[in-house]
Image (cartoon, rainbow, N blue to C red; front, side, top):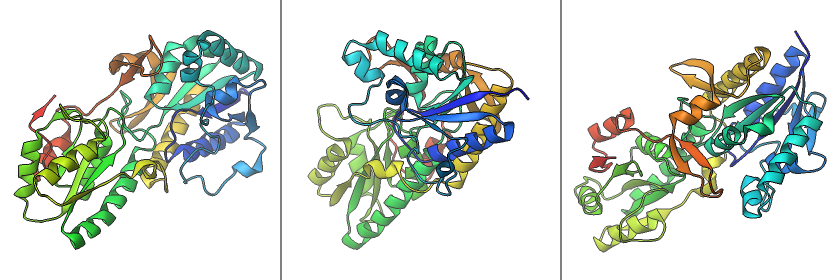
Length: 363
């Protein structure tokens, strides 16, 4: 088996499962007798001169027993870090890209394993020249489950578990005080996290951006409930015409106007934290194994995916083409490839069948 030098980095927002997939990739590289280095602080570390790296082959501190914990041992950057957004805002995008390309060349890598969300993977597709001369293997991670072509992304199941546990505790408080809790979830523009957690906890209503809803009908649904307490799960991406503010606050005001006792709750970054679930650990193993096989087979510009129970790779071209294109909110001229909750999503039908209010018309 030919010797290779592998780099690995995490980019974008953190989530549970990052350390697990890092460890699985490192363990696999050692079995292949490949050297592996970690690039610290994402693109900021790669932009540094010299690039900020750590030897994951020899460094014993990275043989950690706590690989199941959230966050990234390599870190994803910090406020003010040099990334694509900062480079674009400062007019340095061209020189930034050239610096990343030079750093990768100086590191003399055969392959780079890039663990990122749909924004990071869309940028890898758009600025692919950065990775000329090496194999680029992407592993999809995001608690939002908004990456096309893969049934699962690292971090999603763990975030659903965190959110479900959080809502379970609030349900006890809600019962004690005869009130409703409006919980605002993360998820960016996609409603998958709110939908899955809402079904898991047995919420009375789930509001996501992919399904149109009527506030008056929501109020009517809550008033007709056989209970005087419960959970209303709200995605951070929903909007109400004529209203402003945080989505949970907008819903809360509507409930209060109808004399329905309620409180809002914002679990925020707690959703990104905690113990990595068994399903995410298994996913990390599957993606790591698939990535290593791709490197061994000299594949490049690919993403690992799970489709109908099968682990495999798809090209970055196919990933980008498969999603709905939206403008990158931070970089002019760059598009991001997104996945959303589809109208035929089985959880929407299950929620409807079980009497959960999800809205009237699916977009």
